[in-house]
Length: 138
Image 1 (cartoon, rainbow, N blue to C red):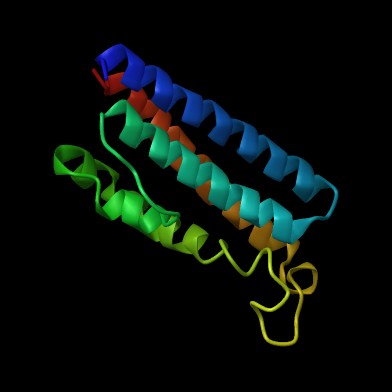
Image 2 (cartoon, one colour; image 1 turned 90 degrees about the vertical axis):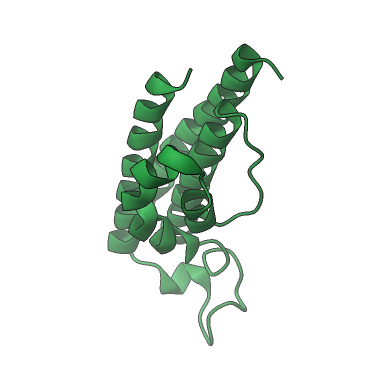
């Protein structure tokens, strides 16, 4: 794939990540905290996958932490400060959606406004750093 096509594919993923982040904010505003937290996880994941595509790499999986840890070379070093945010968002992938993921609780009962706000803030940081990286990708 050409450099231009790789970058365009990466940008498509970044656009969707930004839309997911916006959807998370809308969900937060109407009190859907578990769903807002899940959209934060999705936004971070799609942004990181977009960077992988832009770099001509093949991202796999749903773990933001793996997408940060496995990013090769200089990019891996530069994005490593995002690891703690990625790990926090990874913990939202399953339990924000399934009633059997948390003992005796549904996601609706388990997630608070503060947790959703924190997840969206983490995703915002990841998206901002990925946007910066896109500006540097050749």
